[in-house]
Image 1 (cartoon, one colour):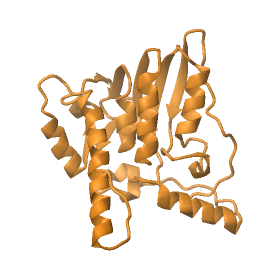
Image 2 (cartoon, helix red, strand yellow):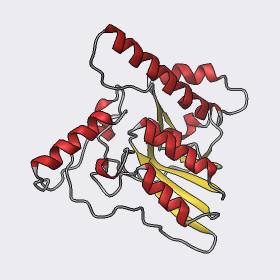
Image 3 (spheres, one colour):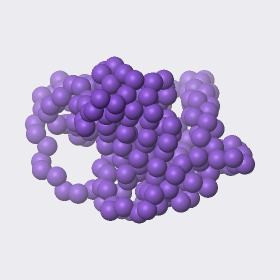
Length: 240
């Protein structure tokens, strides 16, 4: 579990001009500030405050994320869709799981030929009897409908949504060229590889080896037991 000191509660507005600003999704997507164990993690409240500060401006959105909370990601997707201003999304390394939905919120989406888009079925940990588990399964099916609607909005002409549904079933990793066969996106030339570290990669079935090789980091600072309990509760509540 990551337990690092908090540095900032709000997303910094970077490279802001009179008409544009930059927004980065370079960490996991979490539910709220307590779940953001790293400054790169994003959550709906922070994105809401960011968008309020750049109302009406064009956005350059840079994505390199392994995914995270479905509820948080869908909220962010809807906020970005409502933003009044042209949105250009650049997938610098990977847009996996719910980050793939966020990436498709752009009016223009650019994915280099060596970057990845990963789509899969939502899942969650659950305990309970047969009735409870059936209810959880129905719940996940309803969540998947929302995700599929977001994918359907960006389908390339002639692509059947059932093709994407099967890809979601199988957990599919698409490079930029492959993604452009199914989604209305632009492909740019391969760029220098951008590292991405995510707690989510260990949970996916077909994560490329390059994303599993986590670089060594300094030892984590100690935190009190209360904070550990809070972090564990937030992990249980987050839906991946």
